[in-house]
Length: 603
Image (tube, rainbow, N blue to C red; front, side, top):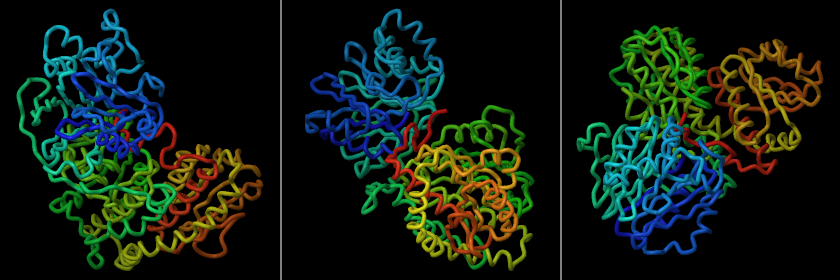
């Protein structure tokens, strides 16, 4: 899986393909390649590593090629290496494919096909290519061959096939694919960001189970019955956007320091005195008011923000909340009834497990609410209502500003539900909303700890393990802090509720074990002091995130004092910075950590 880009039109395409791949590289990669057509000859160039490595392998980007495809790979079937990278070509160079997704029955297909064809890779994508080619050999045109091959395939796909005569076929099921329409040119991408400002005439977001043929126009067909179907051309969002690091050393650092601004963007127009206005939920007030049970499905950092939402909604609204890993929810029989509320949280809006979980909830008759960052993403288009994060494009694979805005949005959602119930005292509501209104300035103040955090990371540069402890609202922040450290520093880290330390993890405590304690939630401070005493009695090295008194332990990071409900938003900032500096000091690529992809579009 990962980045797909394709072009057919009147302009030379190699530079477009390479630039498009580079704009998609944040989704994760281990190799990259392009295939383009010159004089009815398909020319394939593949390279392990980054798109920059691929650019060096392309000797002349100004070749007169007007059709081409490109791909950045994140390994699913087969090790990261040149022969497993995309595009894949048939042995006679008549047909090429790029493919995101997983063909689950590829081994069964391969067992039949390898009697006739010699495979060069270990991938399921090459198997799909030869299944298409098999139908071509039987006399079918490429469009029909793609349809027939996909009907034999089980799994997910977002693909582009390019033929030696310039035929270009696209297809989608379960893996995002968008077509960009420009002036005498048509583009394809797994993300519209690949098009730059070229898709001036609009975007077509392909639906599941469709196959499209690209000539000088786009024709779309239902995969299963061959009927040509209509499609919508949608407005282009941020078509002129080119994200740059500016003066920052990495996108991750830039995105950490963008948090005051994106929080401000998130709050604009949504705070009305001491009430919350959420335009995407208008008309659903009574549904939430009557709700007895809300289910939230998500993955990774989004799961951690969802856990915080559970604390908010249950405390403020007295509504039971279940937080589910989407990958588990989709494979069991959940207790969802007609009219239940199911919320999907996803930065990209393209997370495969979350999409599948929401589809299952729909079958059960649930009302689907989407919380995501990307307009026109799959989740934003499949839900009944929802809220955008307004975090802007997040390039760093380890989520920072999008996670923070998820917490802000989920807090606002909780307050929006509560204002129709009237269960919270006005003074309590005012304290929360006053801090929420001041949150951009508070976050800016919090970021001033960066020099102190960098010094701390220098002291901990030899650590191989780390524990994160938090209570109440800050337990999910302990989980998120541990995840950040694992993601980009490759240091083993675990997050726990602080009181659970003595139920097992305390056995790990010695002078070589750093323990980061979130001690900035005032309501739980006394209990945290007891936990810290237990660690220090066993020579553990304590780092405390605190907001009052003198702090605790060996190293102390002060953050602004806020009401407890907003303490996670203060606690997360130094943990993001700590993971960042820890990774930099170890020489890691913070924006592109190994084995990870920004948008996980396969299981």
